[in-house]
Image (tube, rainbow, N blue to C red):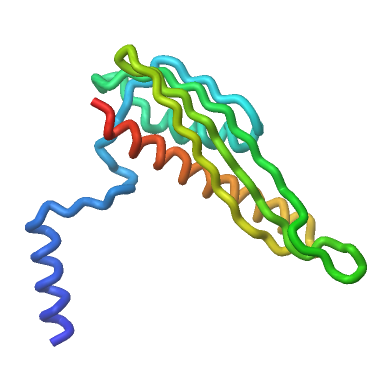
Amino acid sequence: MKTLSIILLTFILFSCGYTPMFSSNSQTRINVEELIVTGDRELSNLIKNKIERLNSESSTKKVSITANTSYSKESQTKDKLGNTTQYKLNASVNFIVKTNGSTIEINLNKKSSMNNLNDEFEEKNYEKSAKDQFSSIFVNQLMLNLSRIE
């Protein structure tokens, strides 16, 4: 019965034209004529690299993108001694997209919590991972908004 369900589900998904929305081989490609990213250096570089990977010279959708990023790490909770036990990570980006004579502004914010780790190296790696996840979310949201523009 279980194998029958899996086979049936497979046929249904393949026959209906299902494609994952955020697939890495997504057909949403843009021709980025100008890309300016400022703000937090590490977050900006991650966003810039992800946008450049989606750049296609053959695309008819030509855009100019200006982005301003910000990132902060704030103390969220402290113990009785006043030592931080948990941090709040805030990332935001403001995209200004110019295409076909129109200008669109897209503001995105993401927040996350991080426990204070005893090992500074592990804490830095966790922050880098969080910034990478933030940048992926921001670029996916940007591409989703651009796909709606004709």
